[in-house]
Every structure is written in structure tokens, then in C-alpha cells.
Length: 230
Image 1 (cartoon, rainbow, N blue to C red):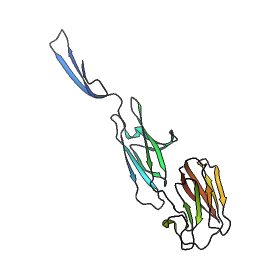
Image 2 (tube, one colour):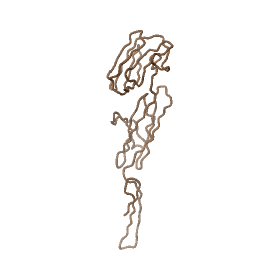
Image 3 (cartoon, one colour):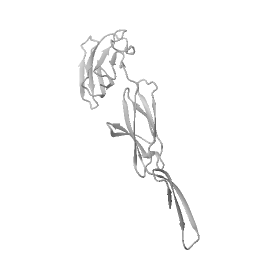
Image 4 (tube, rainbow, N blue to C red):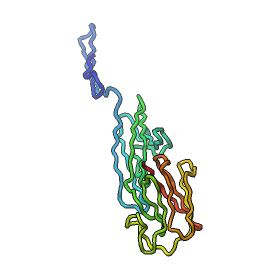
């Protein structure tokens, strides 16, 4: 018996059989793969403009020999730990990425010999200051030391806010803001006195990460995802 190749990859085995009782000789050769295969995945992010500023990632795994599409399972990854299942098959198709956020995910391919893991991530490039309603603006985002929530001036722009945040406003009604972490805990809260143009949340001691701002204005509640980066 002969084997060509001593490391992982393509190889072949050739077997020759002969007996002392016969002049017949049989030779057979078989090609095969040696070692664990590599899980290869290609990635594409759709960054075309959307009304909600979301972007969408599509990941496509290359099918390994001896597997079927049902052997591939996709999971979200949270703090380096495998989370909920989000897809089955060779593709993770149009997975949503919220504004100014990075999402992490895993692909697990189950083969006859092992379980192969691919870990990937994608980020949304839509960050910055912009209005979340026809009169409320939140900036900056990402935020560092403070977060501003403002009613825009009549026909003008709020001091310190970009031109894109300028939206006409007929007054400055009272509103309340709350900053939540991912577990629903209130980290900061404030209320603007009636007639004032806005409030500031001091966030110097809030750790880096993704948070959620709720703004209650009359019977309406506006929600926005905030990224804090020190």
C-alpha cells in the first residue's frame, strides 16, 4: 500500500493485491482528503440608503464535501458567547445591522468528523447626529462625555448640532428622557422644564457600549439606539 501526501489536504492511496497461487494482480487507487476541512465564508453588506438607517449583511458559506445545507447553522454572538439561532443553511441572508452598531455572529458546520466554526462581524456606518422626530434631535452619536436631547429652534439650528439636524419647530413642549442599558436598567434620566430647548445627560461614567434612549413627549415615546465611546 502506498500513500501520497503526509499532511492535511488532498492525497491518494494505492493498493496492489497479488497471491502466490495466482498470477493475477489487482491495483486500486482512491483519492481522498486528509485532515479537517476549512470553513470558508464570503461576506457582503448592503449599505444602500434605508428609511430607518439600517444596513444588512449577507454571509455565504462554501459547502464542504460530505455535507448538506442543513448541516450549517448560524447564531448570533453576544460578548463572545454563542447566542440565539438566526438561520439554517449556507446563507445568512440580509441580517439587520442597527445604525452605528456592530453585530457578531457564528456559523457552525457539522461534518462526519468534527464541528467547524466560523466567527464573523459586520458594522453599520450610519452614525452621527440626526432628528428622531419632527422636532427632537439627539447628538452626538456616538457620544463621549455628554448626550444632548433638544427641541430645534424655529427655522434654525441647535447650537453645536450639524446642519442636517435643523428642523422647524413651533415651540418647546416638556419632555422626559431615560437612558437604558441592554437589561432594561435606567442609567440616566432627565426632564426639561417647560419652555426650555433641551437637556443634557452626563455619561462620562457610563461604560462603552450600546444603549437605548427613550423620550416621552406628550402621549408619544420616541426610541433611539445610542453608542457610547470614550
